Image 1 (tube, rainbow, N blue to C red):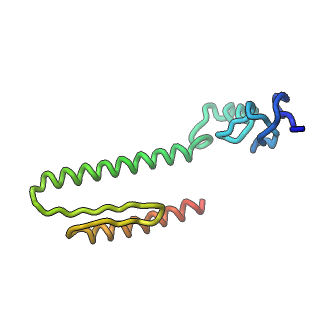
Image 2: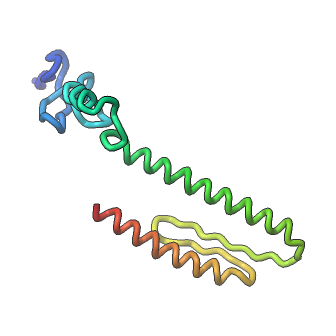
Length: 137
């Protein structure tokens, strides 16, 4: 027979609190913080409202990075369109860098494609450095 919850004693205990080690049911457990409701009330009572340092910081950081990257791509595309419309010359040059993990896929044509390739290599090296540095933490 399954062990009963250490808090309410009604339902089967399916989780273990990381803070106190108590076996608790899903009603007495917070899966986002991986603690029981008793330990959660102690954490919130000690800190007031949960802050970025106590709860959800990695998710907020990833969401901020996603939207920052999206904004940079959008601004870059807008600048490329504006410069091609305002230049008035018939020459077209372009390039694209698609990152899948640390591996860049480079596309380019025209006289400036070499600069795009060099920029992609530099960005790849910087990305790998940040990835390795973040993994060490």
